[in-house]
Length: 356
Figure 1 (tube, rainbow, N blue to C red):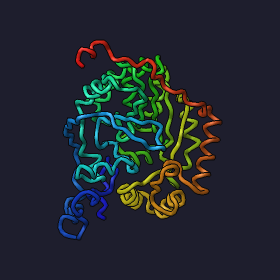
Figure 2: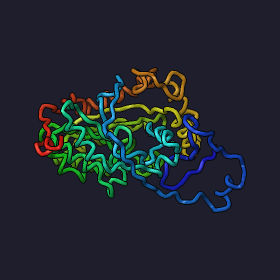
Figure 3: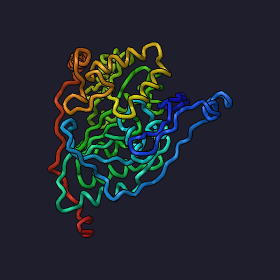
Figure 4: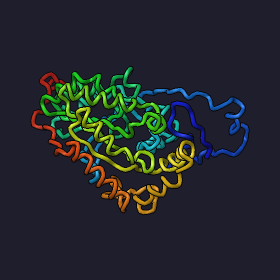
């Protein structure tokens, strides 16, 4: 595989998946593969955004490992470019690469708010927590212009519908007005991911995400607005970020987080070779050691797809991570039970009834 480390991008390659499409083009030493030498580096990669008009916007799942049965994704692909992102393989369904295409060829769903309103208004709809940010980040940079996430939150506020949000962007704090209204009625929980406190590490792991300091500032802003915020110490990357578990928990508590949780890194499908290429590019001195530790948690494989173990890992090293995290969150008061969001306030606005 040809590795190209581009400034501001996470994936070191753009090989297309062969799971759903034609055979991918691999480096074969022809003139295209020498363009970095001829042009003094790969050309800049610009982000493009296309529009999609889906028929429905709420996705359903029955996974026993996931604490929600429905989710909403306003975008496909994510410009944050996190090298470990488990959603990267979804770009293969579009005939695009889970590599650089995933973080540069994005899809927006501008009709999402209208579709959400229509689905919530159906007579047989039963409310339950709607998860946002479970696949791609609802507050990635293009939200600044498209504002689809904010519009969906306005719909949820109107219907008094519970929602959980997961993000690694401080942009979520710009919606504190809506989120505080939802929080006042027990209808929202926000999770902000902090993988590392080291800005240099974060820059390579998550090149276009907010800096760790800005994410912690968002925790404080939302907390001060009355919004409950959890910090996700995830993913934990062996031999790269695992030493920061205790420090992240301390910083989360200082910022006002009400709780925390952690997950070890997962490398499903095309993510594994992309991550190995990233290690070779950024951490060649410890690449083999990192992969060895990952495999020790995944039954000797790069990835464990099995229910029950895929989220937490197995073995002595995984157990050690869990024990350290449990001690750290207890020490900093981040182990309080998470109160369920309310569903009893849900109501279809009267104006909507005239449409059905």
